[in-house]
Image (cartoon, rainbow, N blue to C red; front, side, top):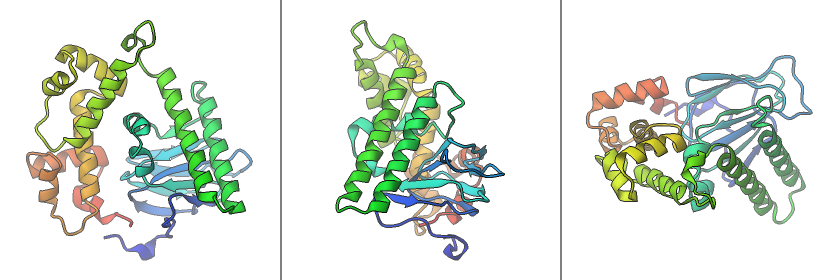
Length: 288
């Protein structure tokens, strides 16, 4: 378990935790919260903040947005002028709602969002606006400020999901009337894989479950999810393992088996490849 004396505790018991000033430095850690970091347009620093997330180092520029998802190892390497603002919230705020849950696999594939990308400029501006609105709501502390802030968060992800649907979904998986039944089936397959990743799943069995041929399912799945079936299944097993690793009493060998890995050696190898550390080291960095 992480020695919490090393860290500035920035997580509270409220559904949303607003961080007006992200710490200048924060050691490597992970937790079960999602985070949104924004570099407000009215802030300025001589040195751009550097944030480490899952083996990648991101330099944030003014107006940038950085998304950090639950169970991702991350640290604040440099934020010398405390220009960053942060928002933390439990994943259940999204996963408990079917409309958002069906997009979770796409949401989690994004980290740094920059207005320099023309396709992302409007989305980044909208996220900045909603985080600023939540900040103002928290300052005013009206009777319903918690509900008001949740509404803004949901508006943020409604816009995010609509943006992904309009810009990323392959055109050939909708019919001339814009029918999205194929997308719905792919989303169902994703949920099924996530819920049953501890089992011996195959591409053929999941394709049959949703009524697709294996060849068509393989092609459409990769087009929509941006990952092939095997990689997506592996990532879901790792996601489950990461959750289980927060339990200090659960042996790593048990965690490997409960997550769908057939051997501890395979689990260690895959974990190292995707997370950049061993499961035991990952466990040590857990911050409650």
